[in-house]
Length: 595
Image 1 (tube, helix red, strand yellow):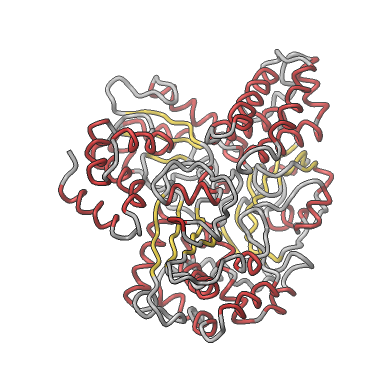
Image 2 (cartoon, one colour):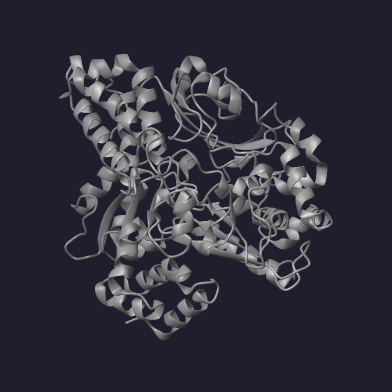
């Protein structure tokens, strides 16, 4: 039975949404936190609160990995995404297996511990990363440290490793996304001391249509992966009809290699809030809902504190700053599903459903949240707006290169000395990013491969690092900017293992709605496992290529596209390595990371 306090908390959450079901994911989080597991009795109790069938509540819960973790007092989650695998995640898992005598996805007989291998946790620069239950991340973990957690559930749950600041503005760059000198501008006072919230006041003096035009002229492109021109996207919103309009903010970054939005949420949350207010004036929205990935415990807490401060200061509420009308901002947690980073999958989850992408048309601008006009923008995109308003579109264009204006938060992870997030103008060369800012490969080794924008983007060879980190240049080189999350692999790395880890990620994260994606991601993973085991044939390589053809561009969303682009590029760029696995009947790279 849920306590009265939890029931009242759920009822308060329901009041924040146009339809109470929007609070269902949070209610499932609260129920699991209180009871420890989700059962049919819990689903029945929640169903009464939401006027739903218990089976429908159970169906939603079954979709999300954080709601279906192994049942135990202490769930030891270890990230096995590509950046963590490159830095020894498999050894961390093996240490836990040896200490606890159980395998991942299983719980100890006494119910004290379980192990869960999880996909990217969004802290790639501090790999390997672990998480106990839904506590803050444990970063840069070692085998010795992870072993210390197995002494008791109490020890594991109390464990903390304060995260170092891994994002910076390199010398010579005048940043506007990150606070200078490793500062954390958590409070409203911190942000206002640097002129915070002046831009939204100025934007409020501009007509919405003129504001949309100004942002379009700046050349700001979305930083969530697709790179669409932001002001043009806003113009898709239809004229006001007297009903509500929404801004949906995507803070669900989950693509392995991508961990930049977290830096804004934790170091400069009021910058995002000001960007939200500016965008909401441009599209004449009535409210904004921010969807934060469920694993981002600290990020979510910092954001909620900033929102509370903004309400108390009268910046948001009955007479919102710059808008001079009622406006609300709400944050809600996801529950562990990469597909919710896709804009319509996110909208479905925000409404309390499984995060399965919607067929389009209609597009969100016409029928988004709760069937109303909605613009979806990501955290970093919105965070550029205060600087654009303060300094003008011409200034913004000068910060980057043609067709790629402004700064980018570039994340660099993998086999480099200084993993981290670096605020730099678009157009910086990949070589400079890796060697000058990330310190070059560990041990001075040779670079074999680079993924320039999260694992959805096609891989580049080590001899392609003189490419400009800009949209057009990367397309010409055979890849894309994506999220700007750069993963570096040195000459020890087996590219078949890289392909397998990425394929396993896409198979796990497919929502299963489209046959080509559901079956195609599974087949690619199966064939790559066969290849890694030395049991494949040359025909299997052709089958991988055929699978990519049948997936690319043939599904509701781009998850299958990303899976196909990744596998096809790795196969084409490193064909010799794939063929050696066939002819030598084993992996020829014995120094490579373990999987």
